[in-house]
Length: 57
Image (cartoon, one colour):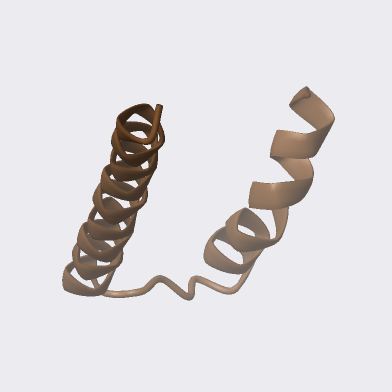
């Protein structure tokens, strides 16, 4: 599991530390907001599917 985490974040860390290339804070905040919106939509979809499957019975 630890190896997987390192391989996922390793390239981004190397680029930021070695080359000093960092995105602006506003861009990372927008990305986090977009990810949060997608998670909410996904969980609402799952809840809707569970509710719909319960009503058919």
